Length: 508
Image (cartoon, rainbow, N blue to C red; front, side):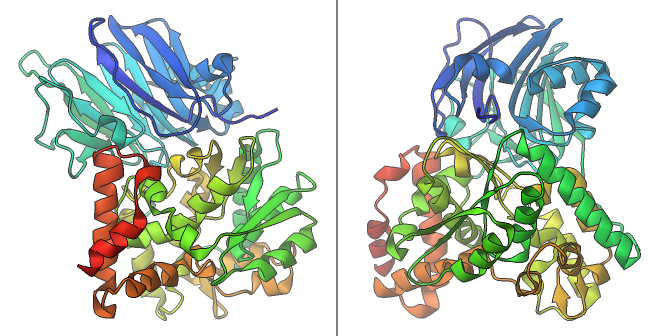
């Protein structure tokens, strides 16, 4: 039986009963109605369940004693939360509601999960994401409504004849470029909105719930290795949810470590690798799959077809940063080609950020640590972990390296444990040395976009279209912005965007 989250996205409008609902969600699956009353407010909206089951889909909504909760995603350490709140709640939304009734907005400081949440309580609208904003949350306030959605495209255009807050000063949020009045809730932040007796637009205050560690832990290498292995093992186990997940396996240390941890619990594990005719990592992935005895699949996507996934990647992540899109594009292409039914997917994505794996040429430990600190302070808004990336194909993805407890440890470890004996990500490699082939745990880093050849595919396509080599980088930025304006701000379906036409525009 599938145990994907009850809701993977929602869009709600909060106001009076005579305000009609207007919502658009891009994630796959049937829309499920959400109706609740709390604190004298009417909440209505649509949700999406990849399971296609109405009863299970309502698990994302909970109402009790004048408090309503809508939760997209899932919570981890459920047993500890249930014990703290003295509840036998069944669904994650019910569990959040019980914990909220104990702790109030401070509850989001104790939650470890992958979620976006809306709470209506005591005349407040409470908006929150998990520590990493891995499920983004957007809000627009007007003189009549508060509109909330897990996708920007659902709220990109303001409602007719409404006074919109376009000043960009909504506490706990940042403005979304190109869409006046639309804001995104910051990672690790709760935005509390309340009606004001003197203002037409709701006022907000922010409550910080998580920040990346800035101090560093000095730890004996053996203790650090054991701690990393233990934290990762717990993070993987909590994400299995009683079923065998599909692991995206490149053959590098990040994904191979997760494959080893899953294989210790569930045999055989399922693994999948993807490449193009330009490049692949099939041999390295095969070595791991053979060592662990996984059910392994290889998918080859023609390079030109991979580039056609750009509109889907932009529509899912709702960003226009070409560098991040290069990282995400192979994943989107893979998700869209995985056969049904809906799957729970684990990836090794994100390990490089807290461990400094992308900066293997940096010689100084001091410089490496500064880079890691900067990367951890600037990840918010890149939407690299948005569930819509896999949700476009009905799947639910999760990233154990960005589990809150794992991240707290990895970031805080002093840099000499991350770069040691000439190896990047040393502490992770050492933690997996007895579980993986030597050629795997010692293998040098290769990014997913490098392994699939995407970094050359996009550039090559522009050059073939006639773009001068010295302007290829700027052409990528222009293409990404044009795609964003089309599929996010204007709501054009991704499958109606002509990538070849965009390439030709850059020639002119």
